[in-house]
Image (cartoon, rainbow over all chains, first blue to last red; front, side, top):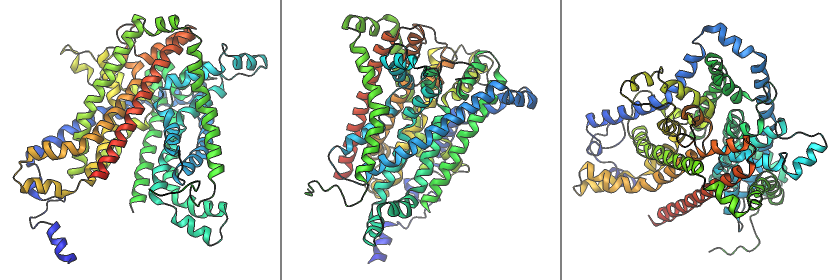
Length: 290
Length: 278
């Protein structure tokens, strides 16, 4: 019976390498044209910008490249970007795990609403995200005046940059974990509980290993966006050179000063970060499909 | 229907996880968002309306919506093509290209902005060839479309791909055995199956394009009334200490993106219902 079923599903026609029977495939010429058109589009819009960054970065030679990266302002920007990510990513990691746990592991009224709320920052324009924190902590706001009276700076300083970045990158970890947790179910966790594990033991020994690849990818995405965020940070930063300019803002300043090679040199670091992010994604997909 | 009053599930950690989630969302998302709404109610209707309906603001909406729509349309067509080619054909470098599709998600927008501007400016790799033909991309509204096409590129591809992968071969085989031509199968069987997913990707790309800032401001030229996007106008108003005007326009923009989020949720619900019905 299974054998007959198998034969019924697989027609006797020779199956081409795409795994589909021949009469359902396009003629070779059409296929080549479709592949060509898709590759041309992707080449123009993805490969060309990627190559351009590195070509322009090294256009004036290695010396200029190295000088652009060792410039004190560039170093300050790199430091600020790293510090911001070092604060934002762990905080959003904890939030992401908690949010995913509360949404994916339980059933209750309002669960869908909560999921929408978690995703909300994604649908807010980066500039508006930054504006929110200016309204909250700026010189016109009550809270801002109180902070100014106590000599605390939020806007045009590190706290503002951290807050805006945290807002923009809040959904990344939860968004990766929720579908994963839903698909995996809770059978192993329940088994651990019946065998006498405590809640934390269950979480550390069972849940964390189960979600580790999704968690890794979520963290990498969150980090990429935290280091690369431009619009939101641009609003709250004030562009004080060497103090509140992150790497993307430093790129903007150099570009507007027509220091193209230097701008692309700093941009090449951010591009490398993006490439690493894509590689991690590929590895995670490969691991989870195994 | 399962009757499960009060019982949320047997796992521990509900109180802790939802407590952390609600506290963080409240502090980081809800309070800032309510400040925006409160701030614009303080404006008064007349002031709000004059800020929101000023000619410069209207021109920026037209550009932002128009360019985002055009870019999303390009991505709808090309996204379907790319998803099809990646899922159905085998060719060298396919895996690499598949991975590269996510580049716009990972690449900081400012980097994309300066790279695209360099490519399409008059001395650039592509601009050099377009200029003699009379096509100017950099520093024109067309440049905005190019930047938004880059930014929205992954959405349709990534929503259509899984649907295409899970489409049972029997569907096409049945149509073929009933005498349908390949073109008929594509039009009558494949496109209707892929359309809901493609539309979701289209709305996502449109919403992303509407709010996009970093990749656009370098290539747009930023001329008021002509190539100035709404997020930039908000930024400019803020820099001119016109916080009220910035708040009013930002609120309009926020409501538009929430309307789109709502549309997306409806689309998702429709897709779920469709999947159950199938």
